[in-house]
Amino acid sequence: FGLPFFFFLLRWLRVVGYDAVVGLSVAEALFVALLGAGLARVSRLRGWPLWTACLWVAQEWARDRVPFGGFPWGRLAFANTGSSFTPFAALGGAPLVTFAVALAGALLADAVAAAWRLRATGPRTVRAALPAVEALALAAAVTVGAYAVPVPTKADDTADIAIVQGNVQQAGMDFLGRPMMILNNHVDATLKLAKDVKAGRVKKPDLVIWPENSSDLDPFKYPEAYDRIQEAVQAVGVPILVGALVDHPSKKGYVYNEGIVWDPEKGPGASYTKQHPVPFGEYVPFRAELSKLITRFQRVPRDFYPGDHTGVLQVGPARLGDVICFEVAYDEIVHDTVRAGARALVVQTNNATYGRTGQPEQQLAMSKLRAVEHGRAVVTAATSGISAVVAPDGTVERRSAEFTQEVLNARIPLRDGTTVADRVGAAPEWVIAMVGLLSCAVAIMLGRWGRSDKKGQQ
Image (cartoon, rainbow, N blue to C red; front, side):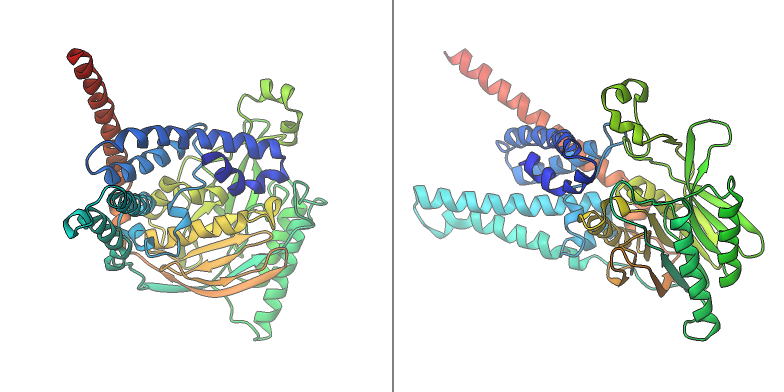
C-alpha cells in the first residue's frame, strides 16, 4: 500500500527525476510497512481500533522526524483539511485529526468484520449483531464529533495586505531564467500596484508580501538588486516582506533563505531565516561523498544554513509569523511561531520548480489545516502560484492561478487568542504515539506467552 500511495502522491518530484520519486517513496513506505506489522499485532487485542489509531499517529510521529528531520507529506491530517474531522485540529493539532480519521476507519473495518462473521456463522439475532452496530455507531460519533469543537475566528484587529506574485520565466529546475528577472517581475508588479493605489483604483495596503526567492540576487551583495527593492518599497510607501537568498557572513559556500522586512524609510530591517532547509534540495548531506556518485547534486552548489529562531516579524501594523515553504508541513515550527506571538501566518514559498504538478495544491491544503489548528489567517505568497489567503476557519478566500503575474488584495484578521492545540503543543501526539507503541509491546508479549503455554501443554 505504502509504495504506490507515496509514488502517486510524490510524482511532482519527477521534475528532479523518477529515481527521486522512487527513492523517497520507498523510504516513506518503509514506515508504513512497520505500521502494518504493528497493526497485525494489535489486531489480536480487545479494543484494537483504538490501538490502531494510536499506531497511525506513532508512524507519522516517526516519519515526520527521521531521517534528516523527516518528511511529513501524506499524513492523514493533510488529507482532511476540509472534512468533518478538520475541527479536531483546533483541539489537538494535526496528530489528533490523524487519530480521529484512523479511529473512524478502524471502527468501520471492525463493523464490516463483525457483519461478515455474523453472515458466515450466524445465528442472525439482534444480540449477535450488536458488535457491528456498536462499531458503526462509534465510527459515526467520531466522524461528527468534531463539529462540537469550537474553532475561534473572531478578529482582534485587521490589516489590509497585498500579495505580489511576480511569476517566473518557466517551470521546472531552470525556473530562475536570467539574473534579476524574478526580482524585476516582483518590482514591476509592485510599481503597478503603487500606480493603482495613486489612481484610487485600489485601496492602499498596510503592507506588501513578496514570496520566497522573490529577489534572485543577494540584495546586500548586488547594489542593483538593493536599489530595485528600494524603488518598489518607496513607490508603494509601506513595508514589504521580501524573500531573498543572502550569503552567510562568515561561512563560505553557505546561504540564508530569508524573509526580510524592508521599510520605505529605514530600508532592510528584521529578518527570519528558514530553520528547516530541505535535504538534497537546499543542502546535500554527505556532499563530498554523494556528489561523486550522483552528479545531479552538483546542481545544488551551495548549502542553506538553518536559522535558529522563530519568524515573528513586525511588518507595518501587523505582527506576522513567517514560515518559509515546506516548513508549513512541520508541526513544531508553526506552533512555535504562533506561541511566540504571531497574530497571522505568512507562508513565503517558491513552487516554480513543481508548477502544475499538484504540489502547490498539496501545500495549500496544509495551510488550510494550520489556519484551523492555530485560529490564524494564513497568507501564502508564491513566486508562480498558488498564492492564497486562508481564513482562520480554513476557508480559502482568495487564490491566484499558477504562472500568472497577479496582485491579491485582502483584509486579514489579526488574532491574539490561542487555541487548545496551541496551549497543549505536542503533548497529544507524544501521548497517543506512546500508547500505540505500548499496545504493540503488550501484543508481542501476550503472543510470546501464548506460544510458551502451548509448548508447555505439549
